[in-house]
Image (cartoon, rainbow, N blue to C red; front, side, top):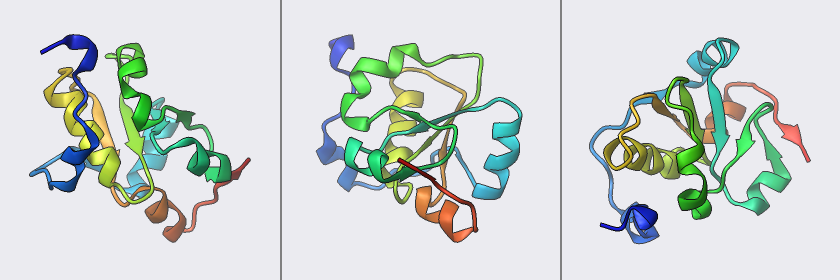
Length: 122
């Protein structure tokens, strides 16, 4: 497979994946305090509305352009709206790019808000 185009097409996202390393909102707070990298993989319209403070914007649609820049010596947490896209992206980074330090935020930004945490507004 061409290494430049290793990210699966979005049709793959219709299928559930068996197990992806994930983290709960309450545990994310501690992980971020310890230096984890938080990536918002939603698209630009979602990012423009609100985001978790401190997150970097890395849209899933451009994953082929940014995945090589990710550190291998730091924990990385991906999040999206509900946790589905971030779970699939986490799976891809682990299985295809051989990252062992990637987690998906369970429930995504929805879970963050439900847990009572604030969002940063644009």
